[in-house]
Amino acid sequence: MFNSPSPPRPASSIPKAPPPGSIPQPSPDGLPHATVPDWNNIGLFTAGVAVGAILGAVVALFLAPASGEETRHRIAHRVRSIRGEDDVWEELAEELERAAAETEEEEEEELKDELKEALKT
Image 1 (cartoon, rainbow, N blue to C red):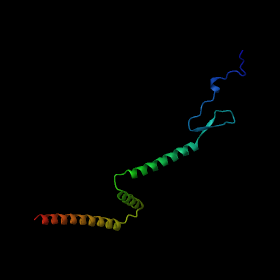
Image 2 (cartoon, rainbow, N blue to C red):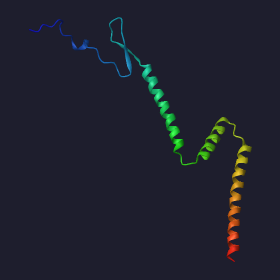
Image 3 (cartoon, rainbow, N blue to C red):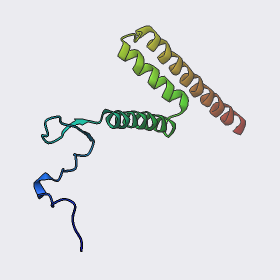
Image 4 (cartoon, rainbow, N blue to C red):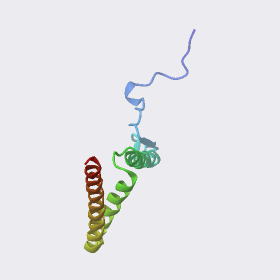
């Protein structure tokens, strides 16, 4: 009833599936297929990793516990130190400004305390 047009092939002649991420290349001499890497998929994966790393860094900056001004100061400081342009005089000026601001705050607190004491008596 059922006539097969061709005899069944032996199991060894059935082509195997190529490994994932590769493209089978035809072989002119009938040998098994050679495979080459699929550079499109590799490039797409690499671009995805790069975009993920950038997005992760941005999210980390937005969710950082420090204030924006302090975070920008830290980033600028690190960039200057990496470039080798870290100016000692700039650092000294910034430190002196911070110290002066702290001293002014302390003096204001002391004046307020003295004024409160003077008003109590």
